[in-house]
Amino acid sequence: MSTPSMDVYQNGNGSCCSMAELEDIDFLRPRNLNMERKGSLGERSFSEAQIGFSPYPPSRAEFDVVHSPAKWSGFTTPRSPFASDPHPMIAEAWEALRRSLVHFRGRPVGTIAALDSSDEKLNYDQVFVRDFVPSALAFLMNGEPEIVKNFILKTLRLQSWEKKIDRFQLGEGVMPASFKVLHDPVRNTETLMADFGESAIGRVAPIDSGFWWIILLRAYTKSTGDTSLSEMPECQKGMRLILSLCLSEGFDTLPTLLCADGCCMIDRRMGVYGYPIEIQALFFMALRCALLLLKHDAEGKEFIERIVKRLHALSYHMRTYFWLDLKQVNDIYRYKTEEYSHTAVNKFNVIPDSLPEWVFDFMPLHGGYFIGNVGPSNMDFRWFCLGNCIAILSCLATPEQETKIMDLIESRWDELVGEMPLKVCYPAIEGHDWRLVTGCDPKNTRWSYHNGGSWPVLLWLLTAACIKTGRPQIARRAIELAEIRLSKDGWPEYYDGKLGRFIGKQARKYQTWSIAGYLVAKMMLEDPSHVGMVALEEDKQLMKPVLKRSNSF
Image (cartoon, rainbow, N blue to C red):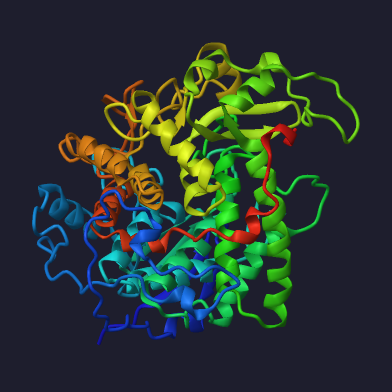
C-alpha cells in the first residue's frame, strides 16, 4: 500500500509549513453559459462592443460574465474560435502552453517560465506571478478557470509566509516573485519553494506581483461571474495586506510609489528606480480593481476610503506631470530653473538641457505618452510599452491621452514595433550612459533584453489597448508581423536589434508568456468581449476637475 503524498511549503530560507485549509476548498465550476459570440470588432469603438462594464462604486453587475466559451475539446486540436480560418500556430501554441503546466497535489497551479531544455534552467523552471498572467487569461478565455483559481489560492497561501532576506523581515503583504514545485520520489513529498526577492538579481522584492495578483483576481471574477472566490475572508485579507504596503503613511510628498531598480518586469538595473511608469500604472489599476473587489464591511470600508483619496491624487499627478506631448516638450524646453515657492512653474526643477536630442524628433505632431519617470530634477523621457498600455486599460490615461498614445505607436511604428513587436522601452541606452545606468550589464547591452529589446509577450497588452481605443487594425498588423517568425524561431523570450530582427543573444526558446501572449492577442481580436477581463471603464469622478496643461508645472 503506497504512502499518501505529504505536501509541504518551503520558503527560500528553508522554513516549512503544512497544508492549510485553503488546500481543501473545492474548486468552483464555471457557470453554464450560453452567450452569443461576438464577431470581430473591426473599426468599432470599445464602448460599442458592449462588454458590460459597470463603473464603481462596485456592484455585482461589474462581475457579470463577459464570455465563457465551452472548453476546447482536444489537447492539440481545440474547438478553436479561429475555426473559420485557423492559423497553424494556434494549435502549436496551445500544445506548448499545456506542456508548461505545473502541478501540485495533482492540480495545475501555474505555468513555468520557459520549456527550453537547451540552456541552463536558472529560474526559468519556476512559476512567476507576472509571467503567469497571460497564461491565466488564455485559460480564462478558453473556459478553463480552475487553474487560475488554483494559482490565486496557492500564491495567497505563500503570501502568509514569514519572509526574510538576510536578517531583515519583509512586509506581510509581499507576494512572491515566483515559486517552484520540488518533488522527492523517495519520501513521496512535494515541496513548494518560493522566492520573495532573496534569490533575484539585486535581491529586490517584486512590487508588481501583488498588483498583478489583484488584477488577475478581478479578471477571474469578471470572466466567470463568480464572486465567491474574491469574497473569501482569505482573499479579502490578502488584498488588504497588499494595499497596506502601498497605502501606508511615510515621508512621501507624492502619491506615486517610490521603488528600487529591478522591482518589476525590468528586473535588472536599468535606471528605473524612483517612480517608474510601469509600477505607477499597475498601482493605479490594482487600486481600481481592489475598489471593485473589497467587501463593504468595517475593514473594507476603511480601505475603500483610502483608495478613493489615493486614486484622485494619483490620477491628477500622473496625467499632469508624467504626460508628454509636443506642447509639453516645448514648455520644458523653455523652463526657468531654481524657482522657489508654491507658484513655481517648473515644480521639479527639471533642467531644460536635460531634454535628450532624440525626443525632439521622436515626438510626432499628433501623439504623446507617459514618460518613464518623474522625480526631483529628473525626467526619464524613455517610452515604456507596458506602463502606457496599462494606463489605457485602467483609464489612467484620459480619452484624449489614449488617442495620442495610439497615434504615437502608428507614427513611430518602425521605432516601437519594427520587424518584431514590441519594444519594451525606447530608445536604448548606449555608450557612457549605458555604463553608468546599467553598471556595464552584459545582458542589457544596447537594443537587447530590457534595453530596447523586442518582447512578443507585449502583444496581448497592445491588442487590448487597441481594442479599447477602437483601433484593432494596429494590433492586427502587429500580430501578422509576429506570425512571420515567432513560431519558426521557437517562441523566443525576446529579440535584439534596433528593428527586433535577431533572436535575443540570451533569449530562452519556448518562453511561455510569448506563447500565451500570442494566444490572448488572437482570442481578443476574434472576440473583443474578452477585453473586459483586463480593461476598466472610465470613472467620471476621476476626470474632475479638467486638467489644463498650461498650469501643470
